[in-house]
Amino acid sequence: MKNLTFCKDVRVLEKDRDRKKKLLRDLRSRKPRLLTSYCITDDDAETLEVVPAWTLLQPDYPAVRVVGIAGGRGDALELLTELIRELYAETGGMHSRSYLL
Image 1: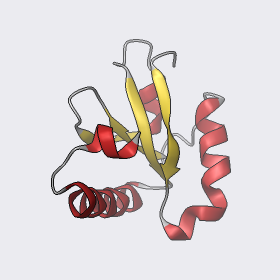
Image 2: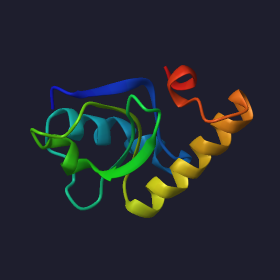
Image 3: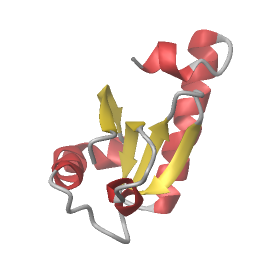
Image 4: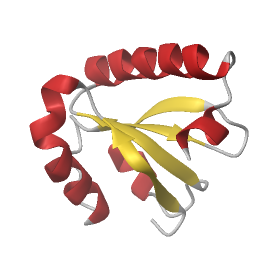
């Protein structure tokens, strides 16, 4: 997990606000809920991607930054949609690195 960093304000859906600290704590302690936690990651190419949280714990997983976390795949896709809309509205494009840092 040495290649895992977190955005200054990791995003969650409004309905998961009360679970945000627990989801992040589980991921940082290397014990994510294997089947229910999903992360939205950003790599050097400014590509947003939804991945199961457990994949981030693999030793050969490339370096990424977590910008969002959700309790399930459907919620992660909903959160990704919100992030894309926000990015486009604020930057006029998909410049995730400059906006989310």
